[in-house]
Image 1 (cartoon, rainbow, N blue to C red):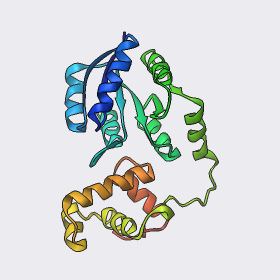
Image 2 (cartoon, one colour; image 1 turned 90 degrees about the horizontal axis):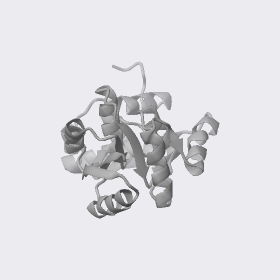
Image 3 (tube, rainbow, N blue to C red; image 1 turned 90 degrees about the vertical axis):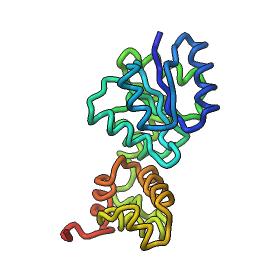
Image 4 (tube, rainbow, N blue to C red; image 1 turned 120 degrees about the vertical axis):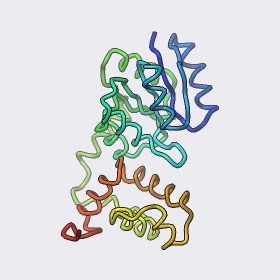
Length: 213
């Protein structure tokens, strides 16, 4: 029996997953849509496996994975996401996820992932494994920033220059909430977990000059 904790911003999905997982012989010890609450619960409840969505409203599941890695939490994580973006798969694995399962997969696929991860094994289904391989086979000049809208490019430049959400909002006449949402969308779209990751991409693809302070 595996003790599981669920992080997803849709309550009805967490409820449905709980029914599926407990029918499969597992125990769901808790769940939330809030990464901060999730981190506190992980320390308190010590589940065996975390099931984590990447898009959590104004937050990113990448941030929770990064914080777990920083704090050296031994809880094994499975990303359960609707995103089939190869960069998301690669970044989740880089941040310590043991498995990445697409939400469109059958319930039996998720159960197989949980069974493997609970034994300390990595698990990628065939489709996700192919997505992960795309990172190593895509053309070297493939520019992920080319998919950004003009407003997204404007905001990423301001973010990597160190401007706060408040400062960006004042210049662009946007609310702090809207700017925060843009930041999360950028990280998800580009498959990075934090602002330093955005900076590295911006320098690599010459969106900003690395020689500038």
